[in-house]
Length: 143
Image 1 (tube, rainbow, N blue to C red):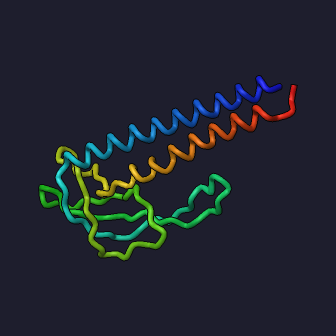
Image 2: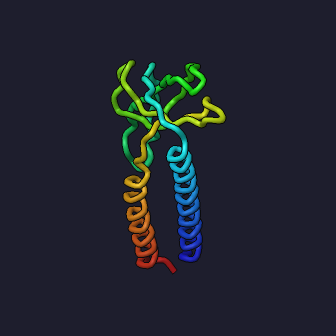
Image 3: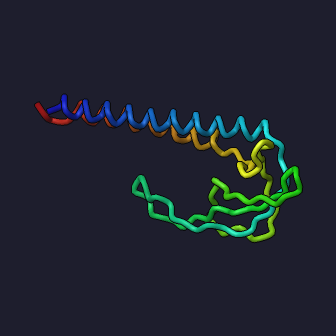
């Protein structure tokens, strides 16, 4: 019976590690693009409202993803939606720094980089969860 629990534990850890690696590589690629692309001041035009997932036994919360507009190199106005969420709805007209792809100004990102802080918190929690789960399985009175 413990063998089954160890297999489930190992599968969970592999899935968590894969998700973390995927998230880090995606975020780093986006950060490299933001660093190499030109930046302009955009302005918030509104926001899309949604809910957090409520994962980890936390309550679901309303979040807001700003929509923005900026003027590209050709003088044309372009719009985009931020991947950064906020607790409160952003005020329309608020300034926002935007990095855009010079070859395709429709591709843009809000300049913000909370990934290091987030990963710095997630990695130790995942390691502690891994150790605690392994320890818990070890002391279960199963044969």
